[in-house]
Length: 155
Image (cartoon, rainbow, N blue to C red):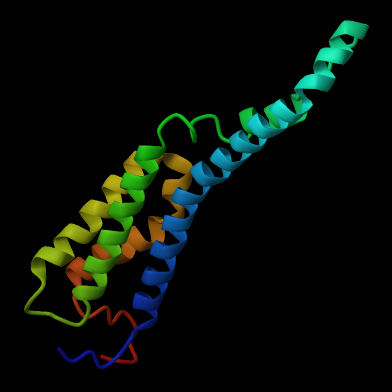
């Protein structure tokens, strides 16, 4: 397979899909790390909180709890959705790269790429879905124009 050019549209699509995967996978990882820190520091502070409780002072781990509870309320509820959405985004991006510059072939990949990206956008919600919107639009355009030659320079 001969791929003469890597168009700026393809580079933007690959960059946007990679950014989308990072933005989908990173919040559950960060929230898991903050939850782990809260649990570890909760155990370390337990003797002191018991002593402060005996003295009549109330001290708890309110700062880490507020960080954990305030960042993303739905990030820890379904981390499997984030992994499935990242996989769908990745497979959609790979399908787009495989379908690049093949006008006669790769029709299945060109059709599967926007479907998988759209499914991932629905799975992650509105805000993270906006990050991969340019990739989704480029994948739809790639379905119509298989060579990704959108500029007038190559025509």
